Length: 138
Image (tube, rainbow, N blue to C red; front, side):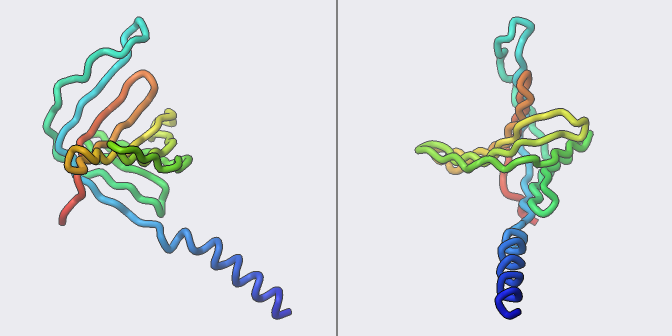
């Protein structure tokens, strides 16, 4: 009986441990740009950077990313991709569905050679939305 209790306790710890590390990260935006594919299937040019001040949250408890733009964008995280790191970037990638049910990939990129500047990319395959972000300070 003690062995069964020990196994149950270890299983409880194993499944409960990731929840101990779940967090909410808050960011503010400073700029916004869009890149679209043309009818020929080739990428166009990035739009001019618009200055925007919005809140973005990454909530690992609820498995979602929310961009508090004029029309609130909610992205349900379907899968957490492995973190990628190279000499210039640190990339956190998430496979998501937006609030319209459309598949997309979100990436938070930390630019190591640019004073650790952060960017959020929302990639739909035919268009990419870019937000320059920084850690929110209350």
